Image 1 (cartoon, rainbow, N blue to C red):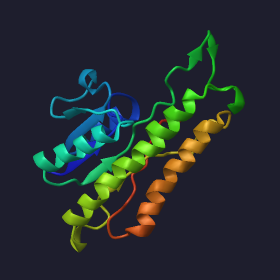
Image 2 (image 1 turned 30 degrees about the vertical axis):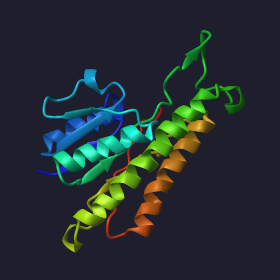
Image 3 (image 1 turned 90 degrees about the vertical axis):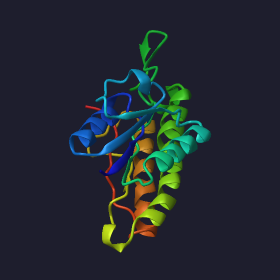
Image 4 (image 1 turned 135 degrees about the vertical axis):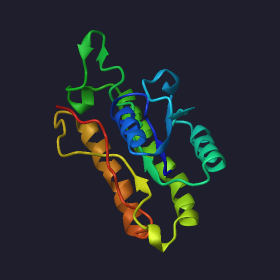
Length: 188
């Protein structure tokens, strides 16, 4: 049975992907700050992890290595960009970037981009140790779908663009190890 880690699986896209992977025969380790209360199938291994904390992320990957021994797919879906959308009774998402609250930068860039990078950094060496030439292009999935972007939010555009660069770099540097499944919430 293939092994997957899905970050940010408590809700949204990450939760949906965790469901889909279980339906397709994966053992899924789902992580998130509120994963304990997430609506996920019983087979999912829930691991509480705040991806802003590198030690939490390291513990997640160590646990998967100890329990499963391998990792076939990483899907980075953790981000906090939609938190605290209304402040002082004002919807702040569509404000010009200079009027948006600064915490949104941390939510998108640290929880999204940096967390994806840290998780990928933990996954890549495991791939090198696990996969031989007969199983190329089966490991890394990272964040971003940006065919539909909310052009009104500059921070969102930066987040989605940056997330696309992490997998592109991985693929260029380790063509024998990486293929990309890219996911992230997008605005309508």
